[in-house]
Length: 116
Image (cartoon, rainbow, N blue to C red; front, side, top):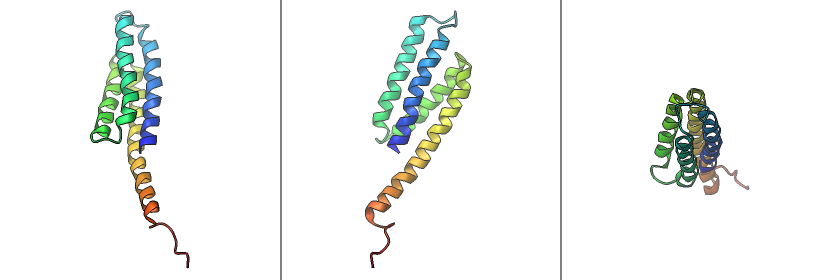
């Protein structure tokens, strides 16, 4: 699960950076504010990669997805991109857990045929 979720979060790192470039074009937003918010969000995406397997890590990831969708208030395309990454997040968690379960069964020898 960690690999899939981390891949999604790193993709979000880049999307947040590109959204910051778009947000700079808004005359109502100061450049300092845009890059402070984007910098914090980019930092959090990298930190979440490291805490995803800890208790509450997936829940924090979901909160991050909600924040990413909500950022569409400032950059409307982020409604779409946030939704796409929320679906990718769900898939990463769902299929990542299935892969982890399969690895555990394989390590326990359940999936291995008898050598007789």
